[in-house]
Image 1 (tube, rainbow, N blue to C red):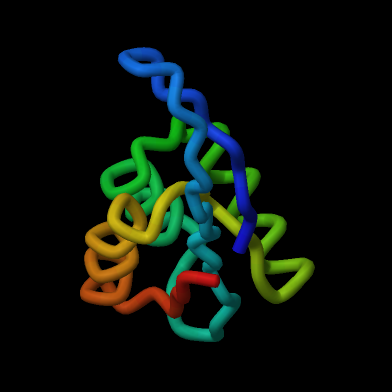
Image 2: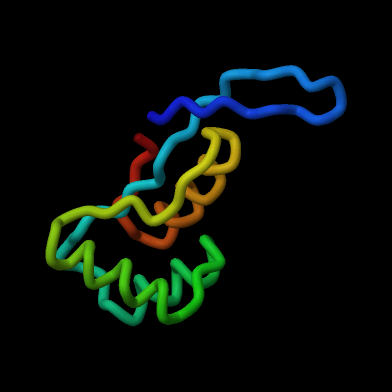
Length: 90
C-alpha cells in the first residue's frame, strides 16, 4: 500500500488517499498469449505493455501490473481471477 497526498481543487483540501497494487503471479497453467490478452482487455494495457508485464511475471514470479485505489482495482482483480489468473491486491 502506498499513501499519497492529493489536492482536491474545488476547496484546496488535502486528503490522504491509500493506493494499492494489483499483483499478477506466475503460474504453470496460463499461456503468454492468454495473459497478454487479459491484461489488454481488463487493464487496458497496450499489447507491448502487456507482453512486458507477462515476461516480468514469468522471470520474477510476480509483478504489480496496475496501481490505484482499492475501489478501482477490485473489479479488475475479480475479472482477471475469473479468467484464471492468480492476482491479489497488495
